[in-house]
Length: 537
Image (cartoon, rainbow, N blue to C red):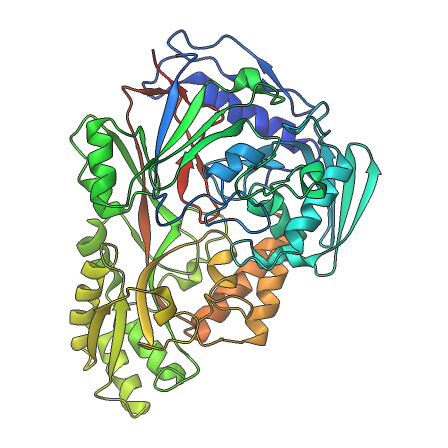
């Protein structure tokens, strides 16, 4: 359930925020008692005793590929990813703060968000917040910032923002969003992410180049940038919760993915692994680096296919490939059994899981061969991409499994996303790990309007069900019913080759960091909670 103030949850936000913060306050990464913060009913914390090993001049060192994705701080045209854990979020803050559970948000620069109805959202702002140029962070400033982000052509920001139609300033600290489409549920979730990072209206009016000179109201400010080497942020002394920020500086160190992260962590050059892939994280086990694994519905290993052209325009072919995948064997080969075969879009322990789909495409090679024969494809052959370092082993296993049903697959590495998305120019299939959370696992891949929807799959029944999820209040019966329709429709049409839920890793140096917790980024992957972490003396 999204933690917001709504018609049914107006009192819930304070309670859940308190509980979440109490859990964080009860123990640090070593399990010892550590004081943290508690939330008042107004959403503002009351500072308590700090841990006695906090280095007040501590520098948090994070890995970042500054060459591949140099930081772009313009909120309307951000360099990906504009998510919690990224430099943009540290400089601007967000209206709501994410927790480790995607979609469950806490008060941020907004102290409350009301789900009025599926097309109306009411926001109450924290009092006494200012941008780093001294401009008040008030309702008019937030209105200007939301409209600035909404009207951009960025494909990094999520499309739902375009549904924001009119914004009414109700008083200096309150505003109401009126939507042209009933997307209130999803937009409330997005308030912890890039679409709701608000720049200073004065900076916008003065024509400040936000890409290199960001002016936000977040806990940090841009200090320096050495292209391709290091990005440095410093603590914002005027942040409205400055006393709760325990890190004096954040340094993003040039680090490519894979082996470079391992080397950086082992050498002490960086303190945290950011979005570490499972194969990489396993190499750190047994070292002084803490590695926690957890199965996640936000890590989906599956085959996305071009359904508008032969042979995959025939649903029988798509169903056959689903029946021909041995998900249990794949899970063992790729994740040593730590993953979970997909049955819908939610793990079995999640409330939105639909148990009727658990065996929908149970491994059945005989059924697969019969469907291929019925479709006139008894000796099907096609090319399939894989992602080097991520899904290569999985592709080899699947290639062998499909050979047993008479399907010959030529696997080849995907070196450019443009070779597959959006038109499947180089191959009709791609076997990869999708990092996406909530309805974005469907909306960004199987609904028109995103480059992730390869070959422009357009199923009106599915589109309608996805929109129903976007509009529903999180945790409501309406959301559960809408998700049931989404899952049933995607399985009926074999909209993808459904694989397994993967494993995400949380990786950090416990000798350097205390009070470690993680937040979910826009893809649902864990990123360090810079609001709470500290560097040890």
